[in-house]
Image (cartoon, rainbow, N blue to C red):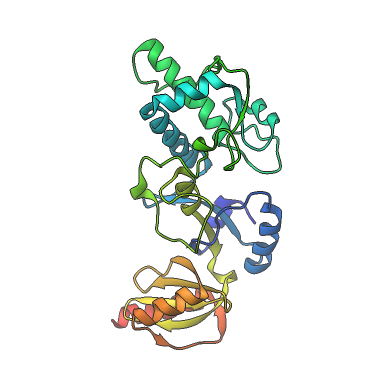
Length: 279
């Protein structure tokens, strides 16, 4: 993996649907992608037609919690009167306070930080009787309960606030690039966070096979289990698909099976550009 700014200086393509939930497997994923893309890749998020960074996505992640807790005062009241603090992976998560950059575990944890920040914002808004728009937040006491509440899986006390259960306030922003079942609910905060993740890859370093070409769509085969779909109009944007789903979709779109030798995507892109010019 290389620095995003350096990668953007190259001939890059965007791949949606391949990078989803990582958890504690980030180091293994980096190793696999380094081999696949010869180290010439990076990752970020893509929505509103633009590449977005970590802070952009966390702003909206947090806003999802804000809208939920503001609209569900009974959940908020239960939480603040039950919990002395909240955590995701381990009790040590409380050390993060309201700072997303403070991460002390092997895996990242955001929901506990978002909850603290949102409760702080709501308390300040009630105090000043106006929406809190200042990006800076003071650390204030927001919990009145007597024990730690975990916000994680179904067995956790705070499961109702799991990001996979809390609805995202702007579901229209979530791309429909599902690659099968996931542990989170559709149109949840986690759904937004995971499905807007993208890979940025140097096209020259991505070796794949031109599998099928249609009137406006094209399917690439990386392996029997992994395919990609793109369009002749925008060959810079690819969506990752599972094998069976890709072959079925190619057939439904009336694509002609071509099965070229494996080559760099730079070469494939030039072929697609030529086909689009002919059309």
